Length: 178
Image 1: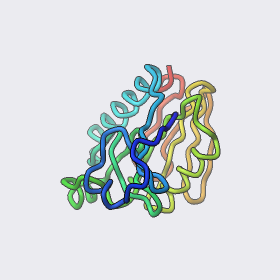
Image 2 (image 1 turned 90 degrees about the horizontal axis):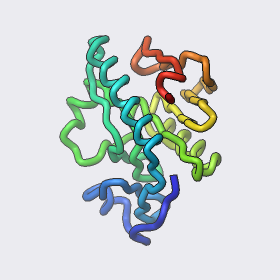
Image 3 (image 1 turned 135 degrees about the vertical axis):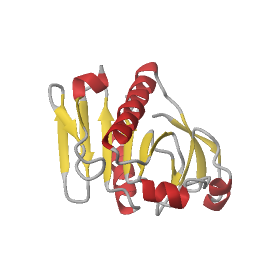
Image 4 (image 1 turned 180 degrees about the horizontal axis):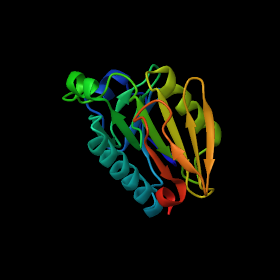
């Protein structure tokens, strides 16, 4: 996603008190997430729908969110799609910002994103409480699923599945990215 500095030299605490929609706090600046395409938005919507339907049908409970703010150890982030367990919903469901990473996050990678920055963001989520991060590459039809100890690449024709969160969820990549 193309990012532009919206407010330079802003404190993380100020952003946490009033996170502006469509922004993240990165290295002292509030940045606006740009570059959302119809395809990106469609995939984000599918993720929210498929994960949300699975949460309900499996009885696991919890909530699925889009573009919701959380605090990592280093930054203030807003994953494209995120899942919060029932226990964390009960604990933090009324907060403005989740004070840790979501247990399950998905980032939908835009053609303008830099690979290194996307990987670093995934690592940031993992060291800040995420158990699983999905990096979605719509153009190449790849999904990289990362946990602390597993890094798996799924591609067109594969069935992608969760590794640690939302156990037993799986979906054909071609259905998700079509």
